[in-house]
Length: 287
Image 1: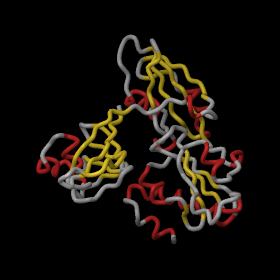
Image 2: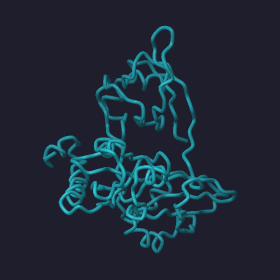
Image 3: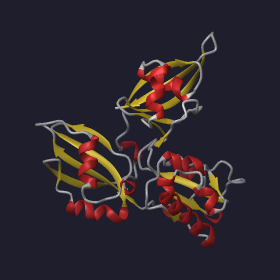
Image 4: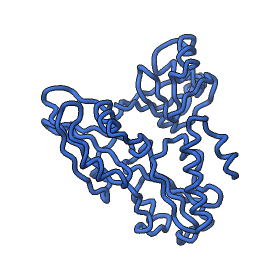
C-alpha cells in the first residue's frame, strides 16, 4: 500500500502519527530488520494493520493483557521460524505468542519500561486524571505512554504505566508528585506477565436488535435511541478512540466505545440470539 493511500484511512489530526507508523514499516521492509515504534498506538491504528501489512508481520505489545495502547513491531519473514505461510501470526499480548509462532523472544525486546508510581492515598482519592495530568505536565506526549492501571495497595495507590524507553529516566528524575502528593517511582520487571496488574471491569449482558452504534449506546446508557443521536452527532461517542458520528455504524466484537459522561466499554463476547432474534452481547465497563 502506498503511503498516501495509508494516510487516507485516518482523520487529519492523526496523519502525523500515521505517517510515523508508515515510516517504521518502510524501515522493516527496505532494510530487512525488525522495526519498533516508540509510540503506543491506539486500536484504530493496530487493528488496521492486522496480522500482516505489506508483506511484513505485525506484533503488538502494550505490556498488559488486552491493552489498548500498544507499541508495534514490524517483523520481516526472515526473523520467523517454522510458520507455514505465516497465516497464523498473532498480535496479542500473551507471552506465549512469541514461542508459539517461532519468534526469537530476544529479538523482540520492545523499547518500553513499566513504571510503578506510588503515592499516599489516605487523605484524598486519586484518579487516572491525576496521574496522567502530572505526567503530561512534564511536557510528555500522550502517545509515548501506554495504558494506565491504578491499584489500591493499603495506604498507597500505585499507577502502573508502560512508557517509551527513551523517556523513562526523564520521568524518574523529574516527576516529584502526583497532584500535591509526593511520589515514589520504580521500574517493574515485565517478564512474568501473570503478576502484572490487570484491568478491572463491570460485566453487563445487553440485548440489542443489532450492533448498530445508536442501539448499543442506547442500551448501555439506558437512554432512548432518539436521545443518543445528539451526543453521537456532536462527537461525544468514540469508537476505538476516534469520534464516530455515524449512528448507523455497525460495530464488531472487540470494539471499544467511550461515551462521555458514562465511561469506556468493550464489546467482549457474542452470547447468541434470543428467541425473537435479538443479539445478546457481553459488555465490559472499565472501572
